[in-house]
Image 1 (cartoon, rainbow over the protein chains, first blue to last red):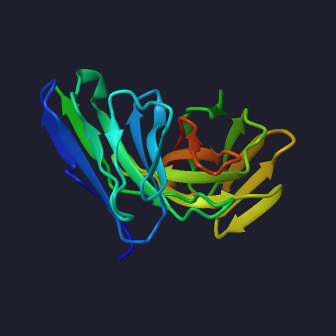
Image 2: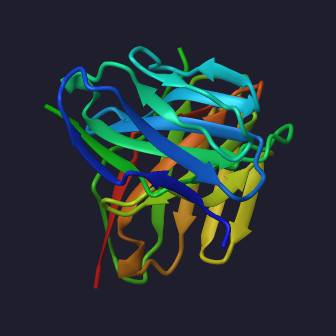
Length: 114
Length: 111
């Protein structure tokens, strides 16, 4: 089954404790992206990657890191989480065809930072 | 600044009616447009994509794009209670590298 998976699905942590949210897709997609969704603010892009070893900042990259060492994986790293990073996080992927950016989303990770 | 405007709703329609959802965008360089449906607590699901001016139909869904007016809409015919969700419009920039999302319109279809 073609899908984007994220782990963990739910996470409660404390300020300053480094964490990683994993994202993996099995569709051989070049493009992968991370979003956060907050009430009243909608979906906002954190980082994206056009292919292996190619990453770039989205609209809200502060406090986050990513890496793309393999095509299928795109982990999101919070080196020192803060309460304002409490949010619902989605990973998405798509084929990187010109004019096409039909992104498919993972199930989401609900993060709470105390 | 890229912006996408959607009426937050809720838009309430009776079962069997046509639901009309609208979206305006500010980036004239936008090339591709998408409608996503998001049920409460779930991830966004792509339901329509449209790349050129005019109408595109897929089952009960019709997307309409007018690039001159910077306007995209989604019509849902024969609305069903299962269509009750938040609908997000999104557009891709000229470099196709990012998607900008609107905040969504909540649709409520009553039996």
